[in-house]
Image 1 (cartoon, one colour):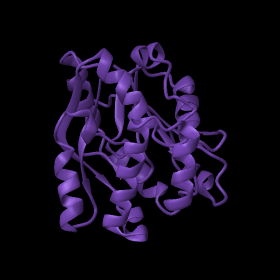
Image 2 (image 1 turned 135 degrees about the vertical axis):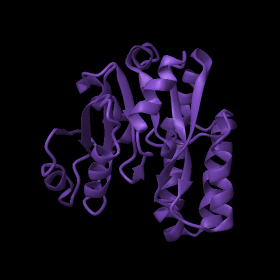
Image 3 (image 1 turned 90 degrees about the vertical axis):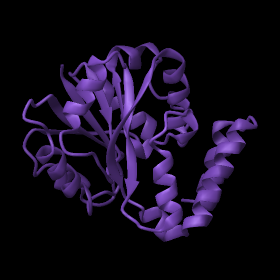
Image 4 (image 1 turned 90 degrees about the horizontal axis):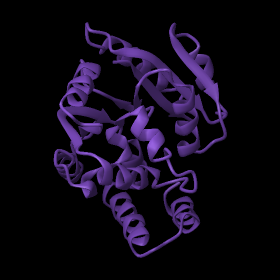
Length: 230
């Protein structure tokens, strides 16, 4: 079993060094990780220079768009398992071993439950919800591992969605296979909550979710996101 880690980046020079260092350090002794691939969306900082300091990490340039970057990374990947990880998230120690065990137990896809690096009660509650298997409790920050064959069968991430691509692909995955939520915490940065305000940002995320549920098109969701969040 060979796992390809795929990390989309854009202006992540400040944090990518820590992420790559921890990824290499937290691999299990069985070394299921075949490669780490960084796909950069033409950053304006020195993200790629920081990546180049790591032996064994491959880097590529792509158009800036997380689904496009992740699909591009999947095409370059040589592993039979794809593991998509955000640049500001750190999986638990032995993460590769836990992924391999989930796949050996008849799961074709899954994620880790999540903790944020923040102790606000509301953020802790959001983190607590991620231990459940309901699709509504999922998000891209939890990372995603998936058999490459299944990823190709469902045609990867929908590139029409510059945002919400994680929920889109999860809908297809949940309809195809038993989804695994590994009960080991991945730690995600709460930097955007700090920047925008915790309750305000959560309400905006819920607004996007319900807009999509009510039939909003990808462009509508992106316009809302650009106006109020990014």
